[in-house]
Amino acid sequence: MNYDFNFDVIWRNWDLLAEGLGLGLFLAIVSIAIGCGIGLLAAFGMLSRHRTLRWIAVAYVSAIRNTPILVLILFCYFALPQMGIALDKISSFVFTLSIYAGAYLAEVFRSGLVALPKGLREAGLAIGLTEFKIKTNIIIPVMFRNVLPSLSNNFISLFKDTSLAAAIAVPELTFYARKINVESFRVIETWMVASMIYVVACYVIAALLRRLELRLAVPR
Image 1 (tube, rainbow, N blue to C red):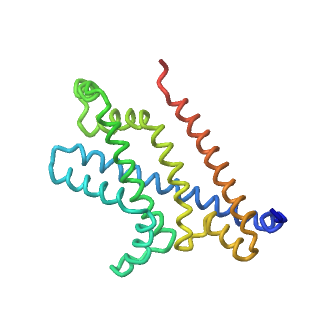
Image 2: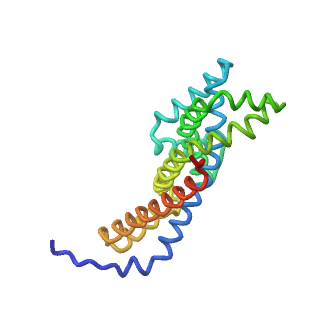
Image 3: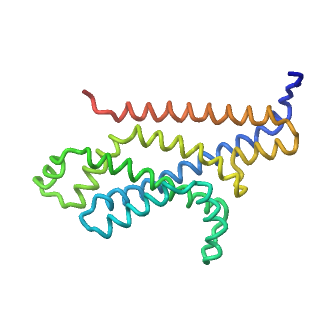
């Protein structure tokens, strides 16, 4: 292969790639934080004794999980303004990614809630706690600790999904990599470096989350 590698254009634009990586991490963190709230509500809805709540929660999870995320991104950015809901591109993407994350986290949280021993609720009632306090002080904290590995995997997947924000010109890592590629025509170098940044970032995130899991693990 007679190809002369030249990474000069990458080093000259390293600040843009770093800025894009930072924005991608910010989008993922905000989206998973909001998604946790949505997913928790949906999980309780799926386990509710009220048929209407169960139907709404199941319909939401099924609809979002079976719709490609890129379609959701384009719908929220281009279609919602036609309905009078105008969002800028970053807010639109965070909204979409949060809704998307919530649907997947709902199943994670539902499984975590089902796996909890029934004695937790009974113990809370025995010491005089209300149902609300049992959920907020006992059920949810224990459940979150148990599902942390799955939550970590979802966060890493969500971070990688931030690359799709380039479709609506959100200036994250993929957007800037594409910009550098178009302006320099250094296709191999640009996407090789961008790929390696994603790989290294995901490894670092996984290592940090693994340390958190070990720190919160119950000693056996």
